[in-house]
Length: 496
Image (cartoon, rainbow, N blue to C red; front, side, top):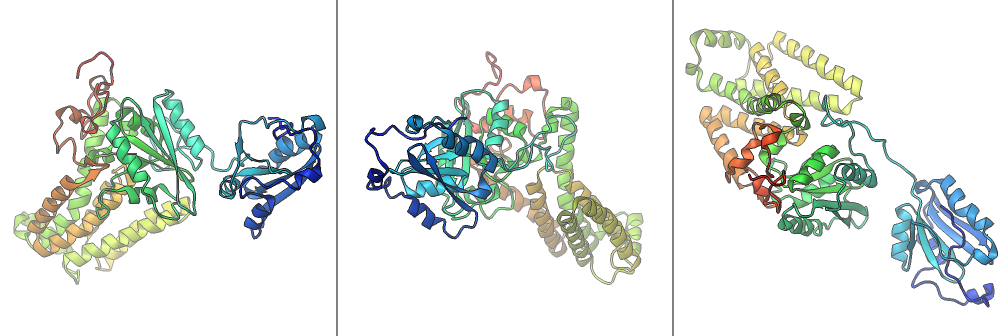
């Protein structure tokens, strides 16, 4: 890219003395910019002689590539002939600047502000290519399928999605969120497929951001949720571009947030949180089995420990005599009730999980495995916990790992503690009341205004092809009915 002569041609009678009398562009001048950035240690000011006039460059050193500044800007200016110094800038990155606020935003986004003596101002974006390379997903790793994932660069993330959906109907709208953080937020949707009402609601919620600092996509989802007091996630967070492309093609909307590798997808349903990209790579029978197994594991993680406490405290007469003898023998030396035993073991397990997550990868894996075995065996030997309780807690913990969505796993933890308290208080009746409340709560939830329990409530028979089980791909010819897409058919010329 060549920078030969940056500014509009001026009258041939121009002299430097005449330029000194010209006013700056609006409220913008080199003095204003220097005053604005006077306490920033890496703010740089360069003054160059470009032809017959002087040029000043302003930028933040940590934001730009110094070699690129020298090769693309400084050297062409110094070697430009005098007669070419007045031509207009030829650059795809050029932005005309008229106000001090605009100059501040461009400089802090990696731009280089350029002044000449008569008040012409422009900015060029030469941001250094910060950010990670494109790696495989850590949160949603799969054996087969695409290995790329999003990173902290918004432009790269957009490229990954557009490579999968190279059509002009993929529309994008951009906002700046946070008066201090200036976080770029991009809304994506497929025109001609998505319901316009969903786009309207998404734009309305995006325009309502009023926080000064928004640093992560989770902050934005928290501000847009329909039910902030629910433990269930109402937005899907993912770093997989193939998942985002599939969601857009289904008629959903997607938010990309700068400086975070996780995008937001809405609307979602309860059943979406148990799906994995690998379900669609395996044969449909294998994918259906694995998905059904996740639902069973979720039920085990939620109800096994509360049910054990309810049976041993309130309903021991339901247990066969041989099994009851084993349970009584295992608890014969435990000095406190089953509720406190289960609560102690669950809290210990959560402490181990958090500790393993916060430590370096290899050390964390060792801590999780060795710590669980050592503490469990020591608790049994010391008479703090029974061997049956250790088995129950271990099965519940392993079952919770089968849920592919991390946010849903966190929700199941809180629900497990709540059900444990109800089980210790009212036994199976308490678990029944908890299950009833859970169903009522899920029925009342919405995601971007759409029912959370769809296609169960409201019931859409055609959508059951991709919920608890997955039908063969050749039979999944329609988009989800609850999204009310403009184009229902996935296969042109076919009837649902």
